[in-house]
Image 1: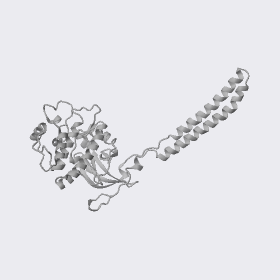
Image 2 (image 1 turned 180 degrees about the vertical axis):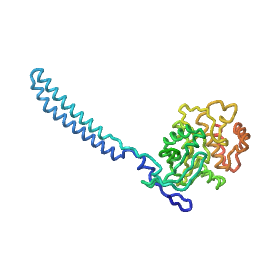
Image 3 (image 1 turned 90 degrees about the vertical axis):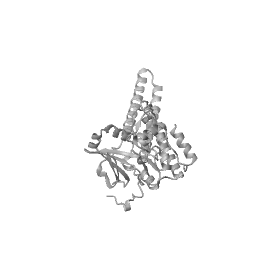
Image 4 (image 1 turned 60 degrees about the horizontal axis):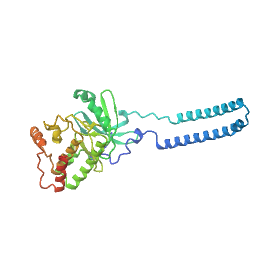
Length: 342
């Protein structure tokens, strides 16, 4: 088991499952290129040798019979060389068998969090010592919640994302009862807890956080992914204080840029999803920008801008009814309003 003093996570993590996840190393490719180069060089020498001996014979040949025999000799020699090259090349490009993930590969440590359908544990890969987070989903709970497609979509989307402010999904595996997600370990936990402790963030810190989230969203939208559930509870903090966007359960890959499904958390929903006059129309990735504005407000003020009873929250969102306190800088106010009106 992983030992942690005072709840602190291991201070260092080795390279992200580099041993487990890697394909053929670069050195292997270099060696292969050298072999292929040697084979090509050998074939050139053989061809030149054959040509130097056969060409004079062809020149001296008198009559079609001699010329035909010379051509046949050259054809056989070159064919044999070509077959040797192909056979050698086939042997060189054999791929190693990928390692199959299983629970026995990991030492399981303390719990990191619990959600509606999953529990997350600190874990360490036995062979490399790499520290990660292991999210455990129970299949019967997924079936009861009828979220099979949602889980499959989450895994597919997150496993293809590579950004410093997006939590990595290194791999996944399953047994008869459970699904396991191998996730990047964000050592400083949920951003929501940091916000609760601080009440609200100073302007400089909020600016840094919003810049990181904006960078992550720009990357997502470039890949035609809409997150649809941005909130402090779904943002983690890495060991160096950097934000990590996580929980892609409501995310969707939408190349057309248009969606109709209403989902997410009420306080962060945009007018497109709550206004009866607009909710039947499709929306696009701008719903994430609205949530970014709400997040910015909450960072600076300490609470969501439309926080109220569920019915009143919906009405206030539809009208854009919010009051920005006077202690918020004029620049931040301007940015919140611009993002909210985009």
